[in-house]
Length: 294
View 1 (cartoon, helix red, strand yellow):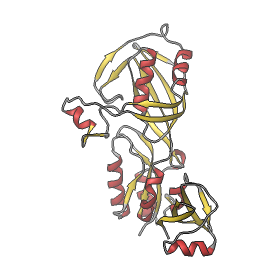
View 2: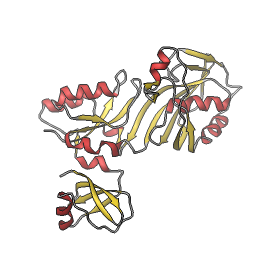
View 3: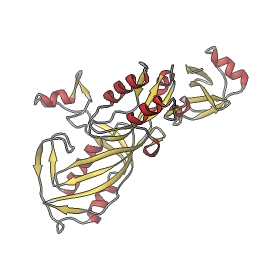
View 4: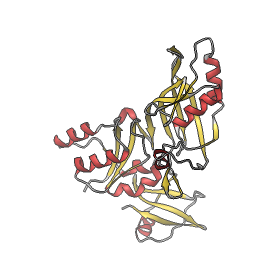
């Protein structure tokens, strides 16, 4: 049985579920899950857990993400990205907008902000996905959510063509952030229709794009009897506070018993000789294993 974490480089045109389905066939493993959904048009880092590592998947999805992409000012779409149908146009030229105006507007989104998920999203309202309402032309009140933006800035000059303005950007954000909504809200702040015209995730759960593997590369490695793509289970708890156990403590938690630790953290990743042993949760003055991983 295969156990570990895979830093998958998701390609455009497939859902996160599609990627998991293809990996099941490539690896011959049924127990596989992904950490953090990517829209079909979005490429980049998709954390994958295989075997025992699926037990720490929930801790991987809590981490922040980093994205790089492109925003187009001049028209908006139904899906808030390039795949949707045109909704509104506000064509412009270089005399109407400066880089300084864009930078100032982007800076206003730093910190904790409120977002309303797009209609074409998987958020559930009254037991149905928002995209189901959107496809049938129904309107429904969407729940607000609080997200945190720690970075949001331009990475290219503004380019003007055919009444549109485009520029590249980078954003570092918390779990649950809709980057396409961020692009639309930026346009609103500038008094312009806008959408996210390209996006890739460059980092998630401690995994980076430069060290990711495509489905084809993973299949090729397996054919050669290699598995450089497979990371140890420890990569799944990188974002959790860490504690080193003594041998006696390791034995106690293997039986599911409480132990005493000098910590105030609510959740801990417990290690022994650099191998993760369990996820511990604080109960009063003691810690109890939430998940034993050995």
